[in-house]
Amino acid sequence: MRFRQMLFVKSIGLSSENTFPETRLPGVRATICLSFDRWPRLLPQAAEDSVTFSLAAANVLSYGKGSQSVEFWGIWPPRQAARPTPKVCPVTCRDLDGFMSSGSGNWMRPEGYAVHLKACQRCRGLTRLLEEGGKGPVPSESQLRQIKMGMVDNLQPVRPLPPSRVFLAACATIFLVVAAAGVLRLGTNGWGALNLWQRAGVFTSLGASAILLAGSMVRLMVPGSRHIVRPAALPVGILLALMLVIATAFRSHGELAFVANGLVCLKNGLTYSLPAALLFWLLLRRGAILSPKLIGAATGGLAGLIGLSVLEVNCPNLNIFHILVWHWGVVLISSLAGALVGAAAEYFDRSRNQMS
Image (tube, rainbow, N blue to C red; front, side, top):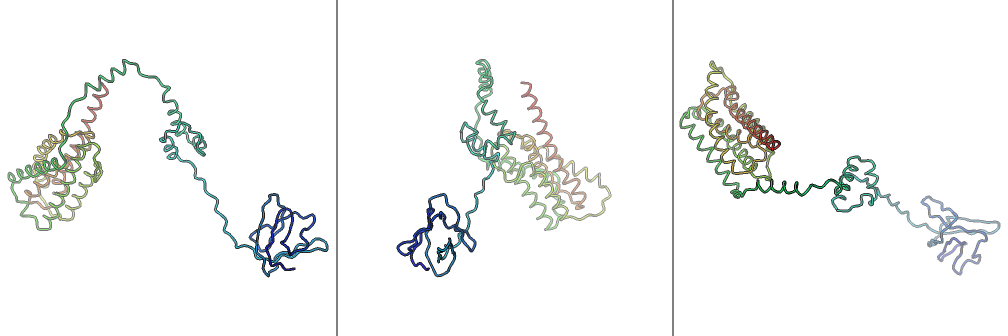
């Protein structure tokens, strides 16, 4: 028997609208289960829901009981993709940190946070400290008064620092004046011995290195300044870059008095590096030196570049080993000396603060 109207399948039985004389099947409580296989099934139904579908000319189900039988002609609705089960991401230490920063006082309320606290010992200890923050010993009035007096006694008025370009101009002036004084005193024999490519490579690298070290030194004078290159890595990188330039631009040849000639060049280079370092120190005293070791290495490296510049203009010896050991060695010794002086100043300052 074919039906051309709408059929309703309910949990109380089977019925049609004005076309099916056998409106009920006695004793049948079933509904059509819309499964995604080819043949639907009749399953017991507990909820009172309904399914409506349109009939068509394909026999999809036959249900019989005794001498009565009913044939259903219809097309099932199109298959629908199953919805993916949402993933529940576990709570991390960073999530708990954000929840603490939000100001909520109940650590156990959000879902998943209690599980994380149970598993993470560090977060559990932190929450315990925060919860017991106001239960510790409170300093007395005399202690608070003593702390206040110590802070007020050390307060002194300071003048604002000039712009960075002023310090950079001062560094450039010191560099050029000291280098010019060395060249005028020692002569320019080395300049004539260099060819065009050697001059370009050596003095371009010297100028770029001086600019980078001066910029780093000025930024270290102002706390909170942003650095182009990490101050700890810059002196090492400059030393390696200069070594590469020297190894590329010069060649080795025989030299009879290697040590004697080298000690003369080393002495001449350090002779001009030392006063340049003192002048840079007078400039640095205007700023706030929070990392004496780093600023000492940068200052020593910049002063060493002055000595290397003087030697490259003065010394006509183009042996690569002479230049690497005695010329480049001026920059290395100056950088190490500056870092050691800064480390010593930092150590004595820390010891004095501990004693007081």
